[in-house]
Length: 252
Image (tube, rainbow, N blue to C red):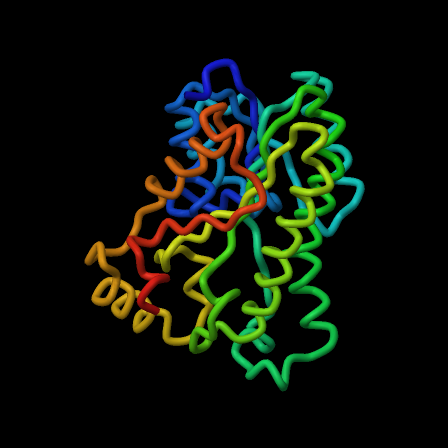
């Protein structure tokens, strides 16, 4: 499905992260990959994923550091010249603000969560445009809490809602360049990042019990959807939020 295509995947934390599922499925579909890692402490957890996926590049990238962001895209351009897809799978909110009701979220906490979880996708889209002269696909990760109130998701609900709106506007901005922009909305998955949400075990149990599919989704299933959306088979699909949650969103 992705033979001959090259892509940058940002957000692999370890082998159980959603971005790792994307990397493995996209590599299995024939793509050549570049992965990123957040810092030296994270590197030992990302390296095994990069090796398993046969990644040709492993780049240091803290998205709050403009120099590192520019350097990462420069390295990709110097090595490949162009890419066909980008997967943005990062989000962050301080524990204090994530665990507080929205009405009590701090100004700085909201700004930081919005910058890392939403505006970083816009910055990457801007950088990716020059590497997609013949078009391509930009993908990001959202969650049902952007559309409906989910207990304990708190300020990340408004942040993900902004991300979903950004997907729609980026799709309109970049459509003439044949660059498609989509968001994937997985059901709850037991990743390290998700474990910071309060009472997350309860959310997993509820999703498993209530989803029409009767089970939780896997990172591999999210990766398979990402591979499809990055492929030419999805060439007419842009601006959407695509649920991979065994139907949980229709009953939640």
